Length: 353
Image (cartoon, rainbow, N blue to C red; front, side):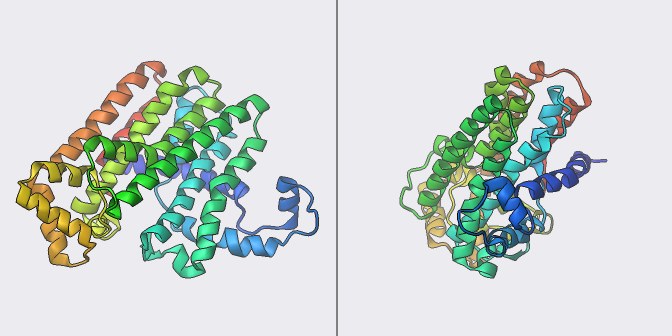
């Protein structure tokens, strides 16, 4: 069995309990009993039908389409590697996954995207107003509900890390939007890595921090958090890589979409600084044109490959995860969970889908 098949099998073990936990924080249908229990008695009168139509339906429309669910698995596996065995961890593990799906809903509006996971984006089904509101609502509803289920001292640390995470997410998204709008073009490798650490690394860092918090291992919070951030950042680089060099049938998305959006990735940044001035100018021109023309996309991909950016990106990913693992490996006892964790981290930078 290949590593990819093995890790996908491991991830499948967590799908059902994660989905049940997600449903506790965001029910498929709202009712008055749930609203009173979680939000208190209404001053006047709740409208559960409104929350079902405006929150539950758009969220579950996206969530039912799947996804790798690696973030909640990361939380549970790290928790198990720390010696934890309380199934209550699944509620915390669900929080970053709900937030992740909420960011996809909002990102698709911001990017003007048409398809997500092979079907129309949520804003194309329910409208931009409902999509933005639902996405925003699920940034904080799961955290609010999960925090209520924790002891006070644990809840305080949880909420501190939650606010920190959401701040980083917003900063990372700001950088990404400004760059692909062409408002700032002097982008370096360090700029890109910081953006990825904020935009994608923040949620995986949070996922790992939740495991440490629930296991009562605040002493490992920083080191484990840095590991989670490195894994998430590498995941983003690999996602960018697959968007340009992946097998479209396995990747499940249209190849070259990031070029059409004019996104700056580690590979485009590297190419722009390592190609001849004439070729770099041409690549920048294609990026700024937001073209969907197949020939121009192919030309851009060839320029990026010519620069050696594809090989460089893979080196950066592998080095980053290796260094992060070398720091946390001595902190964890040799258990099956630790073995799973290493395989998951390796998969996230070697995957083909």
